[in-house]
Length: 117
Image 1 (cartoon, rainbow, N blue to C red):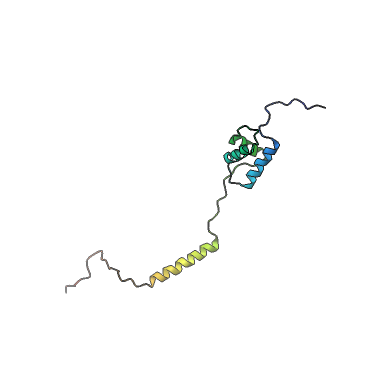
Image 2: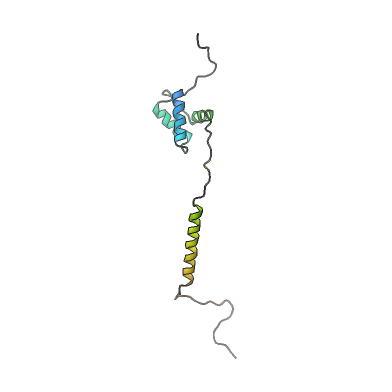
C-alpha cells in the first residue's frame, strides 16, 4: 500500500500550527490575523518561513471562524440610567432653590425706570 501522488501545492502550515492558530483565535477574539501570524511565526509553526496574514485568514475560514464586527451594546445599564436621571433631577431641584446674589434683570424693550404720569 502506497500513498497516491497528491495534486497541487503542499500546505504551508502543519496540522499542529493550524490547531495553534485556532486556539489563539478562540482565546482572544479581538486578535487580528497579522498579530496571529507574528505569534505563529515566532513559535516556528511555519517551518521557518514567513507566514502572511492572508494565510491565517484562509486557515481561519477553513475552520469556520470568519472575522466579524463586535456587537454594539449599551455602555450603561437601565438601572444606571435611572439612577443618573434621578440624581440629575434632584440636582436641578436643588439649584432652583438657591438664591443667587449676582442676578441682573435685563429688559428687551423700554425700561422699568421712572414712569411719567
